[in-house]
Image 1: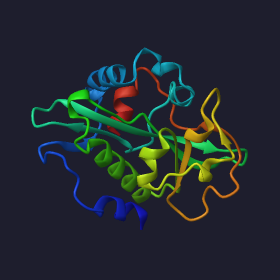
Image 2 (image 1 turned 135 degrees about the vertical axis):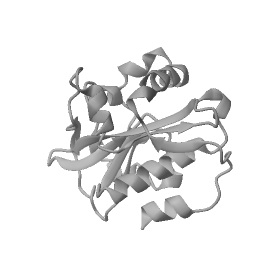
Image 3 (image 1 turned 30 degrees about the vertical axis):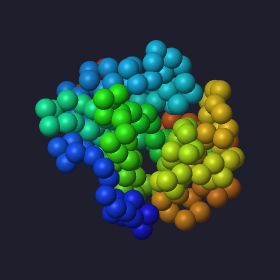
Length: 195
């Protein structure tokens, strides 16, 4: 299976003292600071952010990387979406970010492998993202799988990528990607992430 192959496809050059784990509510401030530093002040204006706004990540699909001191040095989340006019269940991956001092150590690869493997294990059938094709192709993403899909706002067509975790899940998919995940209730946000 693709997810197992990604997890087991050879060594990743990163300190064994960095751990990948599920995100907890106490990680939120450090995660937000990391995303601001990595992506800049315009990150909240992206089309992907419109899909994530006021939503919680998909159940069990928010991960962080922490170093030996417990410092958050990486993050990735997946979000429940409907892919296209026929509302195919899928996930939207992002953002993926690694702290500046930890870049080039394979943390992004480890986070991606964990996220994809966990999504497959939980029975999800497709993952979409907007990102650098040269980076994400190594994980099986391709523009061809998402060629008929669109974001709710401006995006670069060649950066709209898809990965099928089950054969033909995205075949013929066309139309807008829409959010379907759990809505954030300010009082319940922390409890929902732990659940």
